[in-house]
Image 1 (tube, rainbow, N blue to C red):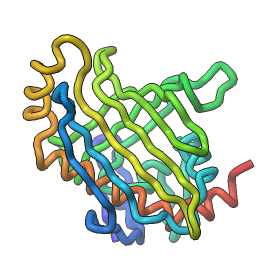
Image 2 (cartoon, rainbow, N blue to C red; image 1 turned 60 degrees about the vertical axis):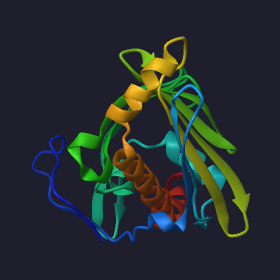
Image 3 (tube, one colour; image 1 turned 180 degrees about the vertical axis):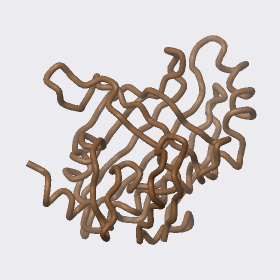
Length: 218
């Protein structure tokens, strides 16, 4: 089980105890590679997410804000999804009709392994969100610094979920800058923490998403 004390952004909040059983990194197929222009690619094929459909995943990414209750504990959905690593999330920009999809912007704040040195605090623009997958592009100071892609495939008993991160910049200075960025911003221990974080949060879907979707989806 997880136990999370109040963070700097959740002042005076009681400890959060959620009975998730974290899947180990070994439950997934993972790969770390370096692209020709020096960007790093982290790839994961997760264990099948049991009882979860692609439609549930689309709904989830459209409804990350708000609270949920599980096991007698009520907290923000984002913190409940990964009670150690997640800090906060909001939709910084929605589409003109108020929905979440291509063109919307998510503001993500998380810390891999709960470690402040592996803090992510970025705005990310959604490029795609449908039953086949989810794509968003993190930006810092207006510059695209990565690509996050997720692929969903319905299989017997659940969903096959594959995702990958490509971190670094593109363009004429990529071959010079990306090796430096990789050493300073995404060394091996950080990359492994990212892989572990993703395996844990995706594995947690099995515990809460089917019931939450059944109760709230329209």
